[in-house]
Length: 427
Image 1 (tube, rainbow, N blue to C red):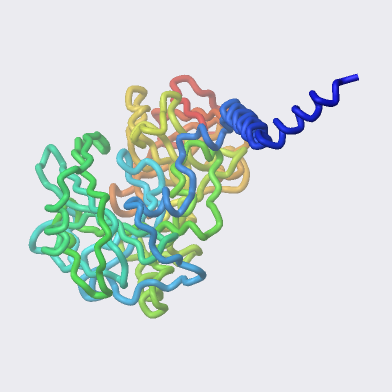
Image 2 (cartoon, one colour):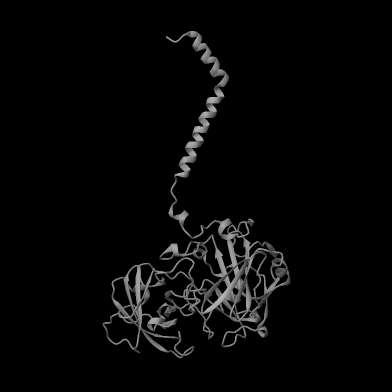
């Protein structure tokens, strides 16, 4: 048996130093927790190069939190360009390779007096107004290194979960210019697209209050006779893409800018969506869409094998409906096929629901059948090239691989057809 004197001494020590044991226990628990955190594996969402959709990291680049949008859907009470100063609007999803091989994620608001060549000029210059009470969060410059012409984009937010942007702003207001001059550290890079080289600089440490109707600068006097308008709403249902890992997070929430204006302005804008000849779009959604992928079919976005998240669109291909007349479909071809005689451009046709000629992209399945298309370079067949005919072959090898070829014919004939000098793309 243990001596009673020893037991008494042990009890006395425990009573005096009980806290020491508690400290040791806490330290052991902390070490175990740190080890378990360090051994946790990184899941796909953490490794992905696509930024996660959080209001702080994705919406608000300045780090200054804005009021929540809540359920509010009307933010804007003023047209960015007066009614009498603009003509037609071009819907989301415009095709204009090589810079816009993929359907555009913005609408275009054209000068009322846009020349046939689409060139901007000081003679066309009109004021750009803030459409609502909001904050200017960032401004970017874009210089065409060939022509030396610089214009601007303006990123704005009326609240936390909604983000808009104007592109091809010719000049900034004195108020915005003064704010930019205060920023010493700007982020610049150079890139090439559409056959031109550009230098872009971004000022993203801004939070400038502007009111509805306040002048922000001028339009139609930069590099384009159109104002580009974007809208991103992180509250709407996410758009679907065949391969989500290829896309930036903001594109899943691409929205129609017209939907966020008061009803009178919204209706005016929806009534002006048309083609370059003024033929109005009436098929819903009138504002267009970039949600064109249909998984397991030929329809949608296609990429070259060497495409990376940082690549431009120029080398890729889109198979989609025309954004101005959705009854037409089109091959939007980048420059990767030019070595094989497949020039960059948009090739239009009227889709059919059966057979192997002009078959609707959405019904072309991955069975390696070869389909033939009789296309023109004009959606109307009467203007913009007077319907230059091109014959194209297409074969969907599997759900992830497609092949296309341009052949020296003016009609498909009866087939069957085989591919010999094709260009290959993947999802």
